[in-house]
Image 1 (cartoon, rainbow, N blue to C red):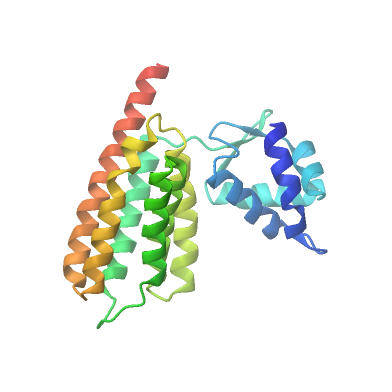
Image 2: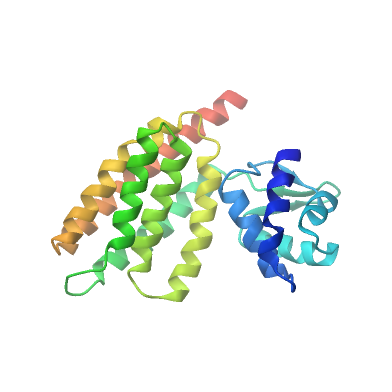
Length: 231
């Protein structure tokens, strides 16, 4: 926990002079997504409030916001914990992803499309893989899909999926072999990008639908194995 709190202290400057629950939530959401607080971690009000220099009331409000986003869970007489997803949670996340991401691609309209963000995410994934940074590959993969959703040009959709992708990261953090999970999708992201560059959105949608089905199977397989190991 000491290392995580040091990182939070570094984030203190992001709060500015008017620290609000929303800004604290943004910081904690990013830290949870990056794995600084893994699923099942108890979040100490005193330690985190001290590291960020915010009041207990502000921190509690940020905890409430993140609980509403399903990233945290409050356990009576025990405190606040980073949520541990169930298999059903993972399946629901992927249903949401399929509904939204495929609809975004379907509704792109006539090419050409602005794909710079997708291209950058693909390159980031390749670079991370060359360096053996599989957590970085996972991050690049999430960025790819965030940029894909952003093609809709909808702030509401971006906000919805920001929460969904943050939940997805909770699933990734229990993976015992991140390379096996994430490596295949470097090439598949690139394939979707190439198809979109040619303007073939129907083909891109089909590729994406199969991609999400395969990804769900892989993540559920990991979850079931993990549950079996702990049982």
